[in-house]
Length: 153
Image (cartoon, rainbow, N blue to C red; front, side, top):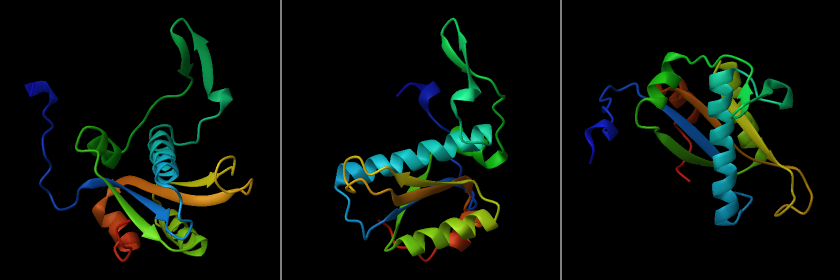
């Protein structure tokens, strides 16, 4: 492996990570589950970098295509996550109520989180459905009190 591709491993206890929480009760096909988890992760990292969910008004044309009209600013946990191991853990809940509870606890703790609501175009028969969420990047000491009792998906 090329040396420049090696990432320094953080051996500290309080590592930066992202936790993805998915609803198991929906019994989503594997592809749908993966895409919903990916939606949550991408939304959370963009939200963490730009501190908002981006919309059309955040973009302007430039020679190469489009540029985002706001500065990218990251906190320590996001910097450590982006420059480190990209640790992600996927956990499970068994209902929308459980998902909402985790989401609300994360918000109350001041954590960056992104709740995903599927539009229902392919799997949920046209019904908008909360499928999962991502919390972080944040340090384990902040996320674990909220998610430590959830099982791995």
